[in-house]
Image 1 (cartoon, rainbow, N blue to C red):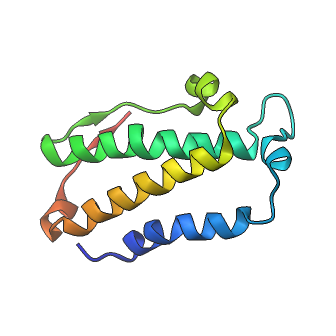
Image 2 (cartoon, rainbow, N blue to C red):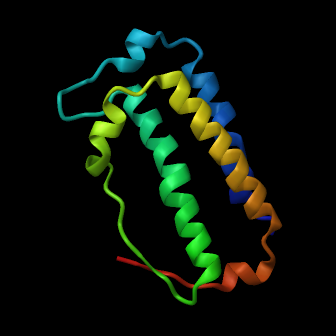
Image 3 (cartoon, rainbow, N blue to C red):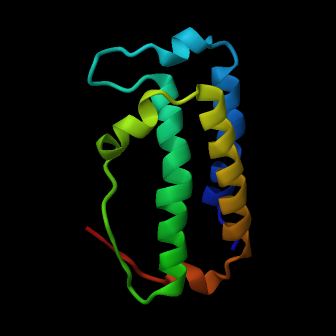
Length: 119
């Protein structure tokens, strides 16, 4: 399936890497407020979401007729994100994104006609 959005997904890690190139570990762990995510926590969220939310949903979307997908709330995973190493989280996100983009590129145009329900 050749869609512009797939190329945008593929480009995201490089764009993020460029944005992060000047950020120190200390800056990445700084939180603007106690109830807000640090950059490191955002990266951990991206990593977790790419592998455990997006990919699982994509797999269900392709395997089931009209799957009903549960919402995902980042606040449920705060403990997972809290002490994440920003570089490790980014590397994991990047690996997962590459794998997911490779899968998306193998899908036929028929896959784009499938339907899922999101609560």
